[in-house]
Amino acid sequence: MITKAQIQSIKALADKRGRVEQGAFIAEGEKLVAEIRTSHLSVRKIYTTKPLWAEAEVIAERDMERISQLKSPNSTLAVVDIPEYELSAVDAAHNLVLALDRVQNPGNLGTIIRLADWFGITDIVCSADCADAFNPKVIQATMGAIIRVRVHYTELPEWLAEQKGRGVNIYGTFLDGDNIYHTDKSQNGIIVMGNEGQGISPQCERSVTHRLYIPPYPADRCGSESLNVAIATAITCSEFRRE
Picture 1 (spheres, rainbow, N blue to C red):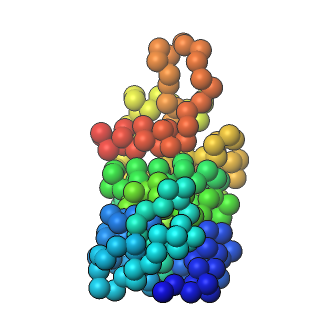
Picture 2 (picture 1 turned 90 degrees about the horizontal axis):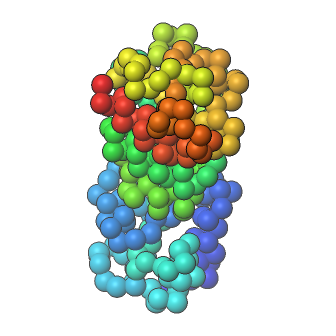
């Protein structure tokens, strides 16, 4: 039987402060939890409303409703240790890496993590003020990709400047950039994607070595001012992989 203290502890994981204090996050859904069970992530506890695995604790549906972060709770919830990854192990000189500058919408971040997984990008480096990758909304939006994609947080302008100093190609999307469809692109380096409303910050822009532009169609059409950052990331990653 799940206790009141356990319920309070799990509910606290909805907030970043609680996740930092406990070093854990929650994952919901039988499919997602099943994937996590067999991954490198460390599972502290699994709660379920139906018998699934020997280590899972069966609880009442009303208790699942109390600990779930979903409007329509799933049958399964897991408390998982937040993984720790070494930023120094990120090798942008030989791999394609995503860098996110102040991307603050959890849905966008979750979708970008899922996109990274699809396009074989295993590292995402985020500015300290990006949304938290272990926010329940982000975890759900990744559809399991959080297992395979390593998300790092750092002072992004300084990290980008360091990478530029090492001769790493750094790409960014701008309205005054070169047409992404007509520009040579490498299979390694860093792709910087900016904030939903303000784009890439001037501090990060200083390190960009290749400015790219995603044109509308037709090129002179007056339509939407900009693309959603997750959609722009999908187009950009697709173009790099197409090369």
